[in-house]
Image 1: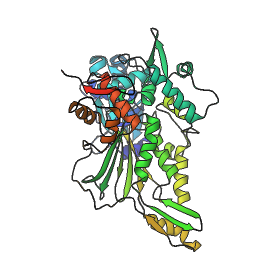
Image 2: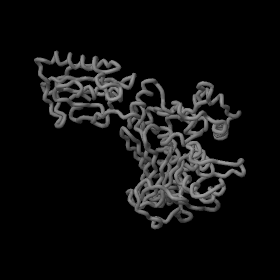
Image 3: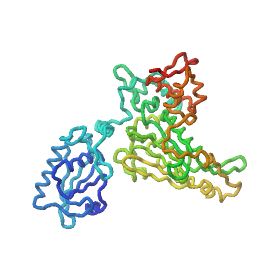
Image 4: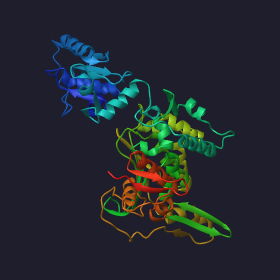
Length: 489
C-alpha cells in the first residue's frame, strides 16, 4: 500500500496526521512515544486530520523542519528514539513522513514530563497517557519479562500444602511417570527462591492460590433474549485455573440444547456448540488473557449467541488475520502455557484456533466470529437450532426421529438485574457471602457450610483460607473438629 492509499483510509492505531508542525513539540512527541510503546506507527505532516485532505508543507523551509522534528524526537524522548524521516510527494505536494519502529526498551516517555506523566499509549486513533498498570506492563516488556513469572514480594511464601497440591495435580493430570517435585517447580520458574524462602510467582498463584490474583475469575451468565436486561442465572468461578476450565465448560453445556437420535443401543449427539471447541475456547481465554487488566473473563449466553470475552488484545504484534489463519502464535503467558502443557490441557501450541473451526465444520454448525480490539478478544458463537443442524447431519440417514433435549425452561426465574449481580446463598457463595454467614453464627463447621452454601469443597477451602489470611475469621480445633468464627474488632 502506498502513501496515497494509506491516507484515504484515515487515522488509525498506527497512523497519525498533522496539518503542520505544531507550535510545541510535545503535541506530536506524545504520539511518537505511544507508537514506540506499542506496535510502532507513522506520522504524516501535511495532511488535514479531519478530512484527510492533502495540503502539504512549505517547501522553502522543509529542510529546517526536518531537522527540528529529528532533534525534538532524539533529544526529547527517553530512552532515545532514532526516527526514520523522509519526504513523499502526493498530488504534487510535499509531505513529511516520520516512521517510528516498535521500541525494545519500554517504557518510553517525554523527558520534560518524566517517567510517570510522560508515558503514552495508542488506543485506536487516539493517544492517551498510560495508567499505573499499563506502565508496569511496559516495564515488564522492556525487561523482557512476562507477568506470569512475576513475584509479588508482599505475598506470603508458598506453603507446603499449596506446593504438594500443585505437584499432585500436575502429576495426576499429566500422568507423569514419577511424581512432580518442588525442585521441578523451581526449575520451571513457577517458584522462586528468595532469601531462603520459596516465593510464589503469578503462575503459582493462578494454579494454587487463586485468591491472591484478584482478577483470576470467570463470570458466567445466562440471559433471556439477546441483551443483558433479564437474567436467568449467573455464577462466578474463582478457583485454580485448571479446575476453572471444567466448571465453565459444564456451566455452558447445562444451558444449551442438544439434538440426539437413539438407534438400537447407540446414541448420536449434536450440541449447539461442540464440546471440544467449547473447551478450547475456554482454555484460550484463560491462557491468553491479560491478568493485569482489572476485569474478568466473561461468558454470556443469549438466545441467539454465546459470547466469550477475554480481557487483553492480541499479544505482541499479532494481527487478527494471523490469528485466524493460524500462521503465527504468540504467548502472553508462556509459564502458564507450560504448566497447561505438562497437565496435558493443551497438546500443541498454536493449533487451538484450527481445532475450533474444524470442530464446528465437522458438526455442520456456523463458525464462530472473532472480534478483536486493543483491549479484548471476544468469540461470538451463533446459536443455530440444534434440531436444524441435526436434520442436516442425521436427517438423510433415516431411522429414529430426531429429538432435542432442553436443560432449562427459559420462562422461569427471570430477574431484571444488571450484570454482574452480587449473589445470594445457594448461588455459589462469594467471599463476602461466606464471611456474613460465619459472622451471623458461632462455631460453624466446614460440613455445615457445605450443606448451607452452594459452593464446592475445594472452592470453600480456598475461600476460608483467604478470609483467614485477611484476618477476618479464625479456626479453632483440629482438622476433624475444627470450627470457624468471625474475628471481633
